Length: 516
Image 1: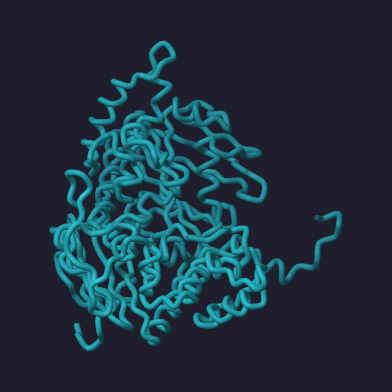
Image 2: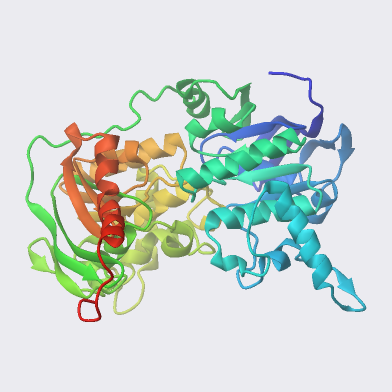
């Protein structure tokens, strides 16, 4: 590590408590000119609280904040912005209906004679886009852009406000590999221009590509600062305070159980076609494929959240009608959705309420919710799953991502679900919480249940599945035994239908009206 570059921002001995809970305890972190400081730690380690102090959302109870070596007060976000500090949050701060140019100048729209000066607005926006090499239509509604380009628009917006320090909170969580490469090119370019950055990611393989130094937090305390090329094993050990011997601790059954879930000929126009598979007791069926392959759509249709056109779903030998979530839950089917915040949780409700939503009807007495019983059951299952919380009444939005995900799992444990459909179950979850979730999956299958798991992380699919179903272009491209499967074999199937579709489009004559 080098001290050659001056410190743009220093948090010196800062602490922060919420009621009796101390979330940051005497932490010191520096961000230097032209360098990327990676903040690393498990969910709940204090990373989010720390960056909220940097950005003026929270103020430390003790300690100091220094900008360019001088003590400052950051009572709000505007104060941080005046010092050149901008945050790119996971939930982007853009207005989808407004144009790219309008979003970049939002809150400081240039005016002339009391009217919006569109020429000046476009000039400011174009100059900001040029700084990061992004070529988009200034007049296009930003909601029509992909998530990667929206993220770059957010960065351009920050730079147009003369930001010298960017805080990037999980910027790669929803990006493809190619989009991540594009983002990292922009980050490297900004570093060369002297912009300092704070980078948060749960993907350890990204750290040496993008970081200079890594500050590790654990339980709100500063543990160590290490070079970005530190080995993943050492980083994990620093994060969790112990060595994790087995990253994917799958315990496979010796014998195959009965079929619990069977899907035949499931089709939905423009989403997926003729999908079929079965899942046995004690089994994890992984579903792999490229973005847009139809994986999420199939899971939602099986659960009853979305309709389908043709096909059958059979659960424990009995037909399960489509489009009826209540019936699915009552029959023992559960869904952990891809986006837990918008589809799996009520963020302003408490932990106990969120855990109990699937059993409100089944445990009601004379039409009234069994609040006392629900609370007792929620307390038992959240303790069983080691959910870190202040109490059952704590708003779930204040929990870390990993603990929020465990509460979604808790809901289906309370409901006694036999088959769990998991859509990206460890997205945005740190390595320690991932292992805990994998152990939950083991418990489900060891107790006679079954799991269908969609994941975009191939090592996770290979490490935690018994069989792997690969989807491509809305169809089943093949099913592999996990024992002999490789990443190359999975990817070969994942692109097969796409490749054949492209080939047929190029080689075949244009369809006649009769054929179409």
